[in-house]
Length: 312
Length: 117
Image (cartoon, rainbow over all chains, first blue to last red; front, side, top):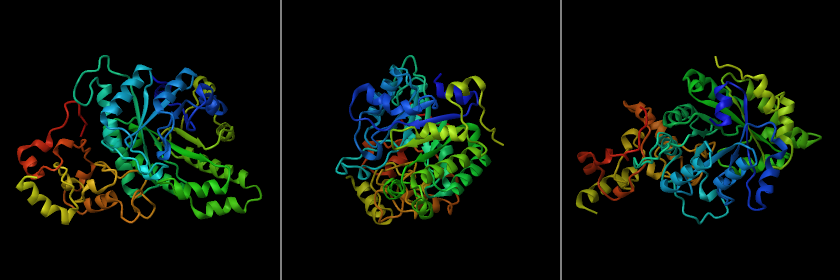
């Protein structure tokens, strides 16, 4: 069982994070990206060509993470691979003992620096989850046997902050029916959106079938917030939040405060299983945020059973 | 294209922007063709929809799936939007979905495809 699955099954509060993309530099480059938050997180996402920019492949990075003692979550998007390639990645991951697979649609190629590329989208994220579930049962999509069946812990992403807001929980439920066991929720800078999502998630019993991890994004400048608002598909940063950071005497500290407040709010919501933390810089921000939130290091959570609030 | 497919295209292209995928799911997507989505999602919407409901890829148009969800709610079979639709069979592109519906060909899914209802 993957460390992530184990922690969630035991009801422990989990912390996942995102590894900054890697282009070169060998295993050292991978290690230095997670070293600042290593002791706090249960697992780290090996990202798949983020924002449609090419980087080292997620499978290669996931294998590297595993070799370096960090549990990987393999991201797979539908943008760059058809179903055969996706099956090959999952089978390859299983060969290396990688169980956590995060199934995404993927930003469009037009969001990246090679917008002239052909977009694939042979499957969508929900079909990719169902494909993963089929493989975990021991067959490729064709029905051809995989023996032994790979052990997989499938996850996905849902965006509480994107329209149609009143359909997002229903779509998350579709993902659960297709095979998702955990959901990293897209970053939302509007607490009321997350709150509404969780209220509906509890009402429709999504929280009982799947672990929900809201994402928190750490930034160090109002310019970074503005960049996210303008350039990251599906994320909106309210103007008043950016202005608040700009007006502050110490904008960097204010940006951290914003992340802290959002994280504090997110973890207070009944049904939250943990947090997914994202930082765009190689620094100790994630560890600092965990400290500030009073989340103990992973080893301590594992021994003391730092439990998450139980869903009502 | 065969005559039936030509007729189907003539009827459905002007109304729905039909792409002749040969396995029509308009019925369960609020009579909104999912192949109009730049990512051709059969189970949308993706997470990139803009705050005003416009498409991530083509900001000049409303998200196909925002429309699909909205319209599906006005139909007597509204719950069908929640169906997990299987992957497209790319061999059927350009064939008539009417014929494929009549023969049951459009309901054939790969052997390994099982999704709980």
